[in-house]
Image: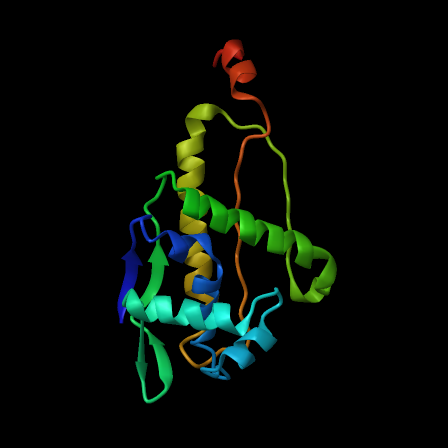
Length: 178
């Protein structure tokens, strides 16, 4: 299996709907069943069996999954969009996953989830380095905690956000001298 496949954003539906990445993770669980009804039952968000079937078909058509003897298998370890490349589809994905997280913060027991938040000040010339560190952390975290294929029994999503809380035009007028 190839490590990471980077897809261009023209595959809008692939990025726009979180179902794609979720199903691609689900199929590697030890208890996975290639059955839209089973998939619908294990997911915490609303979706239909038809949407699940369409998602699986799209993943097969795009060559991201293969089916053999009724079993689905990923052809790549992960899919990733190009870093720092604007995409409406990727923005929609992050909005939907953030919305799902905002709903689950009050639904899931605190022993089953982790939510952290921290507001801080940063020098603008340190932003590139900060983003690089977050990407490295994410890769290290996944490398350490992602279970081997068919060795897991639960599916999680790690959401990492770093965004400005201040208006650009007001902070730029102050200059970097402060």
